[in-house]
Amino acid sequence: QVQLVESGGGLVQAGGSLRLSCEASGRSFSSGTMGWFRQAPGKEREFVAVIHRNEGRTYYADSVKGRFTISRDKAKNTAYLQMNSLKPEDTAVYFCAAGTGLILSSLGNGGAYNYWGQGTQVTVSS
Image (cartoon, rainbow, N blue to C red; front, top):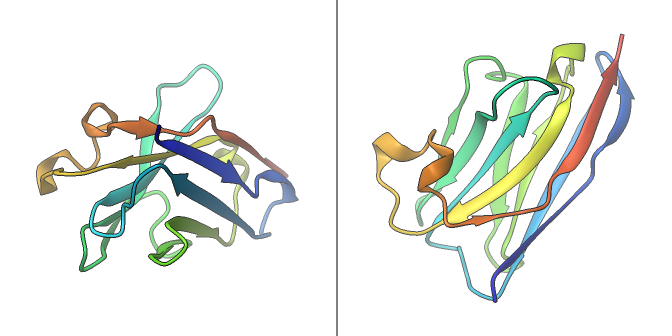
C-alpha cells in the first residue's frame, strides 16, 4: 500500500521560511514524479511545484518561482519543498502527490497523480 506522509507545516511570519517533507512508502518514486499542490480556504486546489522523472527536472507555478524550491532524496524516497520569502497568500493546506508515467503536459493537473498525502497546514501571518 502506497502512502505519502507530509510534515513540516506550521505558522510563520511573512518573509519567513518553512521546509515541507513528503515521505513515500510502499513503492519507489525515484524515477517517477512527485509534486506539491495547495488549497486555500474557499479556493480550488492549485499546482505549486513538481520534480519529474529520473533526471529530476523541476517546474513551478509562476506565483512561487524564485521563492520555492522542490528537491528529492531518492535514497529516502522523500521529496522536499523549501519555501522562502513566504507571503500571507501562501497560506493553504499543502498536499504531496506522486505518480508514474506522467507526461509533461499533465504535470500541473492533480488528476494525473495516482497518490496523495493527507496535507499539511501552512499559515503565513502578516
